[in-house]
Length: 354
Image (tube, rainbow, N blue to C red; front, side):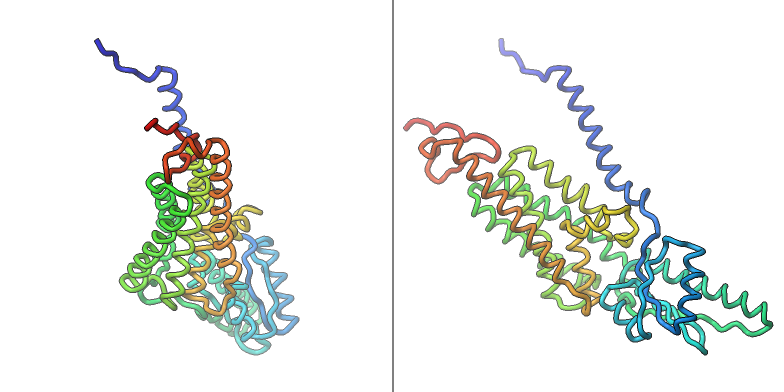
């Protein structure tokens, strides 16, 4: 009479508790940024006569001392340049005779734009109070969108919604390649093919079909493909070096840590220090910033994002090569069938005798 092997009760309960803790980790990872982020340190340009600039700076610091990181600009043109190159999220342009002007960049994200737009209301309230005290007519503050969103994505939800699939796609590709492909270099080739195909399909959907992406389609293709390749290669390296634990480490770094810290839904400056800056050096942060710059801020420097993504590709490849060397030394070459390699994170099974 055959008996069926059953998992011990203690192990079954332990796995259940462990899975619940994993769910808790996921919930915390995605809710923590919204709970801890606050409007702070937002870079905003300010231009105008020195006396007027000093007065406005004092007024704004009194109302919200940590809200803005004011950066001086020589004039309106300089302030606009700073916005287009993504040095700031908006600008206050003061005049000795005319009304103040507030410059916004809706394409930089809704949260930052909301803060800059509220500055116009704050300035208007101050001018109105002064006018009432002197019995004069208050000038009207004007708001000008320097970098508006496209008509095909007027609320900016397209780029934001694409952030999670972009991160998850690289994880899925890395896991599939690690499980189904044998051979380190074959895995690299499969990951590159996957990234190129996925990048092309995403550009077709997001730019040609939905119109969420703007700018040069080939550059967008390279950015998406490199972002996916960076995550997939990192996954391959983790699995090759660590085995099954690597399948957990890759998504933790990319999805649970990198995606919430990417600054996609709010400026990365709003996150507690230094997490916002760290997020820009992870794949989701670099990839999403690069896509937004290519679509709406062609004057902004992008070398840092390209180099960050390329560095993750190299890092993942190094992990895989190191893992291959480690497991190859553990198992003699004659113990493997022709063309086979040690399984990721495990010693290879002994070859069956002929």
